[in-house]
Length: 325
Ligand code: AHR
Image 1 (spheres, rainbow, N blue to C red):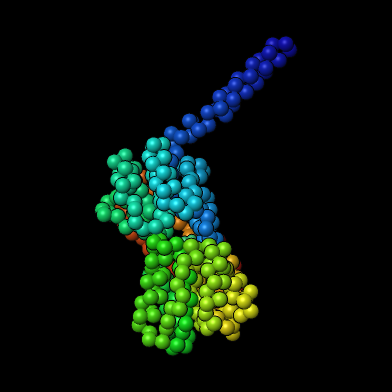
Image 2 (image 1 turned 90 degrees about the horizontal axis):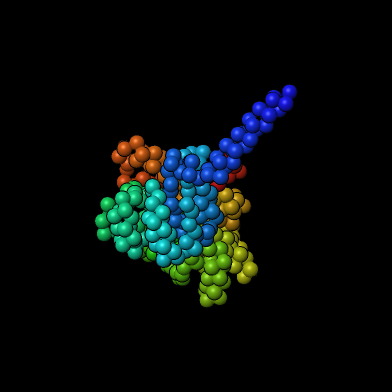
């Protein structure tokens, strides 16, 4: 009997010892097999960005064979450059960059190329001297998004329009494309006039602040063209606080971009007249690119995401329920 107890105790201590060893060094055991991804995110300026971060964080998990090193740059390019340099030092397998602005990436991406680390750009585009500095890009056609909004204005709005233009972060592809779309529309339509054009930096607070000051300077406003949902929310708050109404049957038409869940709620409510989708679910798309590269396959250099539009007069609750974010 004593012998059996002794053997049982030995077995227990071996099992405990093994689990201690495995538990003490989980990273080194797994690191060998995991693909390490360094992701430099712009920040957390909007609902869209939150959904984009979640999509990346949900995808690049151990269960899918990844270790994610996530960095939030708080809207500053210098923070993104520092993050990329850290990723290079840590010898990550892939660098994924959601760039705050288009320019200013040549030097740091050259450093990544010298270290033989593939760079995948997501969401916004970059403007570099040599396209070989990045392996692939996946994101939205922001100019097309702007064109869709202009087309809707042509089909539904009057020939004479006084437009307030709330721009996103200046120098970002999302701002450049959406602004170009509107500016071309105004150029082509004599009766359209941009009476105020200012950045709201893609945030609700800044959108509200800018709109409040514009409302003090302009009595007649027909359309607010807000380059994302959060700035549209801020603008709506400012307009309502000034005693005016928005949306369908309101004093001021509101056009927005992103079509996040909250944005679509406001569209269904009739406060946003027209919402152009910008799809943030890039996690699975970047994963697919990495898997192709791991398999030694060629990848498309540029991949544009297909996007929808939502009109307040036709949107349904089912459209919102179908939304993944
Ligand atoms: O680059 C995509 C844009 O960035 C989204 O429209 C905006 O909400 C975000 O902050």
